[in-house]
Length: 257
Ligand SMILES: [Zn+2]
Image (cartoon, rainbow, N blue to C red; front, side):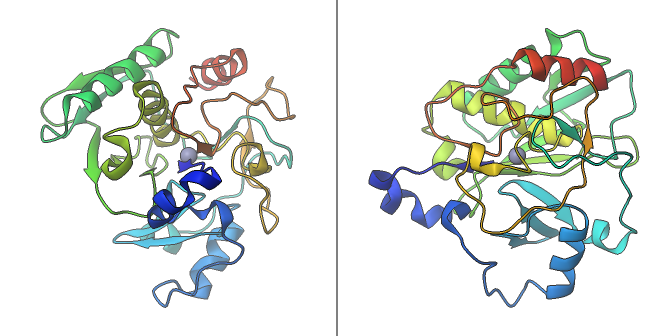
């Protein structure tokens, strides 16, 4: 998830490397063109792509691992070019309980946010039930500092959720609790397979894109193909905004899970 910056906060946040204003893929020698082509062929925008230890972060907060890049690109079942609810071709196989652990070294606000995010999902009666644990965990939430993303996680594989959510404590230690809760809920959304609601039109939450985003994601049946302003899966969020599930978010979640 990316933060939205206002001009008055530009200087404060520019060190976070918000890609909102990026016009070109950065000239980073650790990012090779072949990987960018694979990522775009998978349907993701490579604008503002960031190299991390085990792969890349694209669209602000989505981890594409090196392993995913050597596997064949999956062909989606259905293509839509509009914005709305989209899911990955890989989903979590349920019904099941998904355990979530917050690194014990993190401040208590992160446990509180995780509990609130879990409560938002569990209130929907999905086939996936979320539970916070203090040992183990199918998903582990860790803090990072100095990263160029606000948060990051990946998509499911082999029927399991992505195993890690990274939260940038340089911002989130002091951001509003409602925003932090939304960010944790959003990252869990990716980890169970949801793409950005506005991936085809990120101007919805992030400002105008500099290059077209190729279609890939699988549209959730019954949800509109027009954009929706308050979805929990919008790509960008400013501090102070809370996005509890909208009616269409709930339809998308209950349709898939
Ligand atoms: Zn995201």
